[in-house]
Image (cartoon, rainbow, N blue to C red):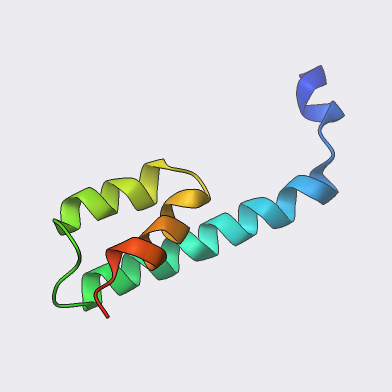
Length: 65
């Protein structure tokens, strides 16, 4: 439990909040769009399992313009 006490939550909390917001927006966008660059299920896995960078990668490469 000493590890949890030593974490500086003031620095970590905004990063976690930003990640959750990006993840939610990316998943909502993925569900709403008609087609993506590649299978939607693969993009869902990328968004969910590649922390912080997954949603960014989806918005850069996954959406069709």
